[in-house]
Amino acid sequence: MKLGIVGLPNVGKSTLFNSLTKAGAESANYPFCTIDPNVGVVTVPDKRLDVLGEMYHTKKIIPAAIEFVDIAGLVKGASKGEGLGNQFLANIREVDAIVHVVRCFEDSNIVHVDGSIDPLRDIETINLELIFSDLEILERRIAKTVKLSRNDKAAAKELELLNRIKAHLEENKMAKTFETDDEEEREWMAGYNLLTAKPVIFAANVAEDDLADDGANNTKVAAVREYAKREQCEVFVICAQIEQEIAELEDEEKKMFLEDLGLEESGLEKLIKASYHLLGLISYLTAGEPEVRAWTITKGTKAPQAAGKIHSDFERGFIRAEVVSYADLMACKTYAAAREKGLVRLEGKDYVVQDGDIMLFRFNV
Ligand SMILES: Nc1nc2c(ncn2[C@@H]2O[C@H](COP(=O)(O)OP(=O)(O)O)[C@@H](O)[C@H]2O)c(=O)[nH]1
Ligand SMILES: [Mg+2]
Image (cartoon, rainbow, N blue to C red; front, top):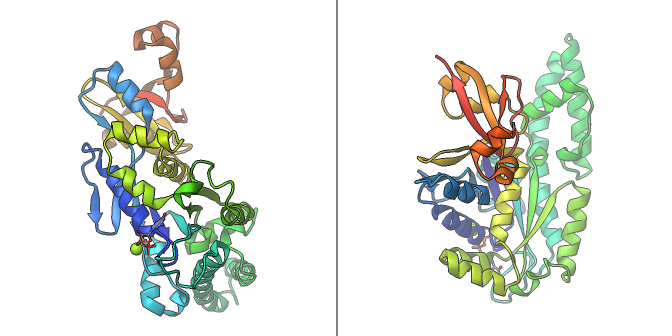
């Protein structure tokens, strides 16, 4: 699962990316951290793992991870090939969701490409490029479908859909706000892999002073929030510069630093968790002395497929799963006590695994 960090030049994308990957690299247990200068693996903070680690006197804790990509160079005209624009747009097409960084901080030393701080104008500049790129895809598809639609009913239906989406985008609206109840249409649409259909989180990059009250007194942040609500996106207030400083600190120092700022967790931690959520991901856990680990699944995954994340044999030979929820285990303090109270359940192949389930799989191959 991959998230792309997008935004205009000089808004703080690379600063955010660097602090994300630095924070991710802290977990030495994760086998790979920086794949490529622009791609980083970031571990998903999960306090439950530390608690289980203590409970089981664990040697090793392996958190869940997601990838972030720093996608540079989106400028006005990108969809017309300006500044390697097409290549960057292609990079965005490969991600599952977008973190759109918008500049809400003032700093006369850092030039804004359009000369002033105006996050809504910036968002629209970027969105227009994404929309233009999507329109190009739709037009190509329409040209192909027109021919087929003459003697193919399904193609005629698809052509009608393509034209409807096109009209929607031409009103400067994102594909994600295009609505259809028709299952077939939804499948077609997913197949187009439109940029503007991807889930978006806005990261409002503010000055340090705006952190403690979460940007409540910043009218520019308020404008972003209002826009995001209309477009069904989430907003996170961060200060990329501070995050970079925090990422350099040891755990204890970090805690004190955050307390001084009046924060419980870093903006980065919040952002990573929200991104995980945005991708529709949850974690089930496995716990034992050798290892406590979070396994990433999409919401709605059933037990055998969840088991398959560990090993394909677990899925193939799945018999049943022994499950206790994290909350129940905590309430009972030990696995044995949870079992006595009947809170350790035996679940079959139709069980839908929940976030925080502690699982033990029985299988036979
Ligand atoms: N004052 C201030 N400067 C920042 C902040 N975030 C980034 N910058 C600075 O803005 C400049 C551009 O940042 P960078 O991350 O390279 O932007 P990018 O072009 O979007 O990747 C750098 O000099 C950063 O140090 C911030 O939150 N506050
Ligand atoms: Mg950059």
